[in-house]
Image (cartoon, rainbow, N blue to C red):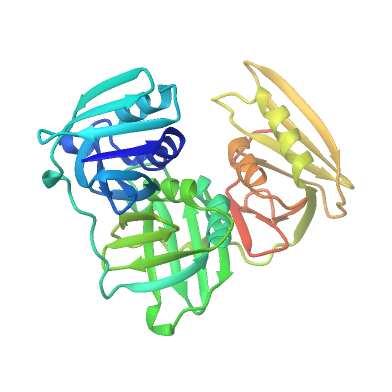
Amino acid sequence: MKFTVSKEALLEGLQKVQHVVSTRTTLPILSNVLLVAEEGRLRLTTTDLDVGITGSVEASVSKEGATTLPAKRLVNIIRELPASEVEISVDAKNVASIQCGPSFFKIIGLGQDDFPPLPDFENAKEYRIPQSLLRDGLKKTAYSISTDETRYVLNGIYTSFREGKLTLVATDGRRLAMVESDLEFPASQEADVIVPTKAVQELQRLLGTEGEVLVRLSDNQISFSIGDHLLVSKLIEGNYPNYRQVIPGDSSIRVELPREATLETVRRVSLLSSDKSNSVKLVFTPNQVEVTANSPDVGEARETMEVPYDSNDLQIAFNPEFLKAPLQNLEEETVYLDLIDEMSPGVVRIDGNFLYVIMPMRVTS
């Protein structure tokens, strides 16, 4: 095979698919990217057998063909090339010659026959979702995915298509983020699945703000078509916990907080929380909240903010990382903190379809 392609296009195409490649694979072919040159395009595909991704770039193809080359090494070479046009030719033994201006590289690949094919999605359920809606929903929830591999059903985003709504939920047992959006699909297409973390991360890299995502769902696989990229992933099998019972009922107290200022305050005060006492305390008194961190071996920090508050005095403590997470990923100027008492979970809400439940921490005063 032989083709010419612009350095920028090839590098961008490779960067969009390279993250799937596993560094710790026992099958050498899984370290490679599959290159298929045909009909004026170069198609790039990578997989780790759980997640696969394919995309394409424009190329001037003088001889059609396919091969696989070491993905990370190829990216490093293309990134460092000087000129803008890259010519790649591959011989019958899968040895690729890369010529670009005065630079010449030869790298040894593997035949494409052993490269695992991506699954097909015939007779799958289909959904069309605006890219901006899915991108926004993932941004508001993905940070709450559990990293504890012993609770594998929590290592992804619970995705529910029910009653004309798309619901995204992520939890690690100590906090929970949820977004609900209206979405049209036939009642026969209702389904609940768990999309694993790695697929969520790849999806976030691909999603833009314009156009739609075509989602296809089979028994244990999901695919996302975005422009000329296709992402496929196995689903996590198992039963997601009943997350609705974690969401507190009506709260007696609602505090209106400026999101940016609250984030800055918590960020500063938490500099003096320690590993042992990893908490910040919020002390609510009339029209103000005092945010404090105190650790015997480090010192203490205290900052006061004026907020509208006219209920009984209340103090509650949270893990500062968990408190900062939604504030960093929301864009609204105002957030609401709903509280019941110092031992019940707090709920962060916005004027919209988002909520975030955060468990309080016990703190000795």
